[in-house]
Length: 226
Ligand code: ADP
Image (cartoon, rainbow, N blue to C red; front, side, top):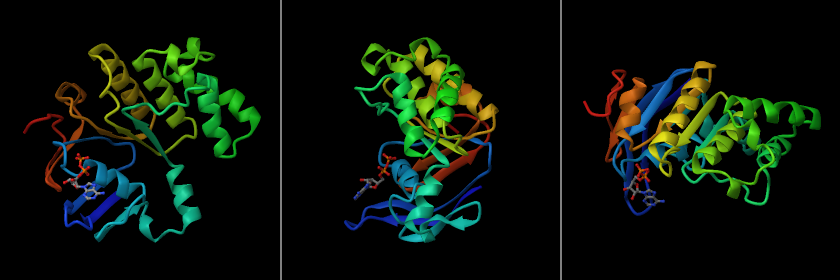
């Protein structure tokens, strides 16, 4: 379980990025975080990944305060979280296979595991046919599917997809959202940030709306607007 307990973040220039935020997210939930630019979404994700510390309050993961962990434990914790970004962040000089294998190598996985698991995750995102292609040979939607496969391959508890469809057309956006739903149905917690009202309204999952560092709405009706 993820628990933000009365978290505030004030940057050194006195910008209030988060103002007394309390949120809990259960395992296997699918939560969308929405809000205008400057609402505090990025700060929320950064604090969750222990890339920065809160000014006030604490962030617990399975009842452990992640900001009290030592460096080694923080790295172990981060391996339980898969990240997907708007700009894909694939390695351009590596094939689809190598992009995913690289992440597994960095986590100390064996060659046998890599050979078995890379095709498995590519099948999950329906991209088996592109296994030997390079990123520049893929469409935006296909690149994002590789990025999702890479985020999944170490079997994280949580996937954070930060504006994953920001660079995609409506067809590809639809496909990516379906894949995120499928991953969630298979038991992974999904946290999605998006500006796309259509996605939120079609998902019908929990929506946390933020504005000026505060949670202004948290409901399960699945609507972008109240
Ligand atoms: P969002 O992701 O919703 O656009 P952010 O978390 O990036 O929102 O920003 C929230 C607020 O905090 C904004 O007012 C922004 O200017 C400010 N902010 C974000 N990062 C920094 C930083 N490193 N230093 C100072 N202010 C920051």
